[in-house]
Image 1: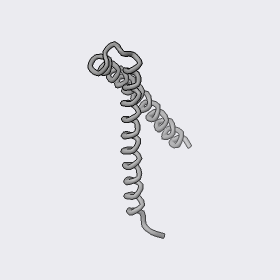
Image 2: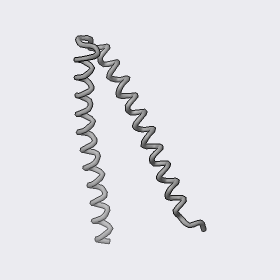
Image 3: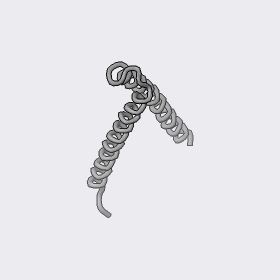
Length: 86
C-alpha cells in the first residue's frame, strides 16, 4: 500500500512537472514566433501578423500531433509483437 502510494505520487509529480515545462516551452515559442512574424514577415500589420501566427501554430500542432500519434501506434504495434500469444 505504502509503495503504491509513493509510486502514484511520483507518477503524478512527473506528469505535472512535464506539463509545466511543456507550458513554459510553449510560451517561449509563442513569443519567438510572434516576434519573428512581426519583425520579418509583416511588420506593422497586426491583423495579418495574427493570421500568419495562427496558421503557423495550427500547422505545427497538426504535424506534431500526427508524428506523436504515428510514434505511439508504432510503439503499440512493437509491444503487441513482443507479447506471447495466448
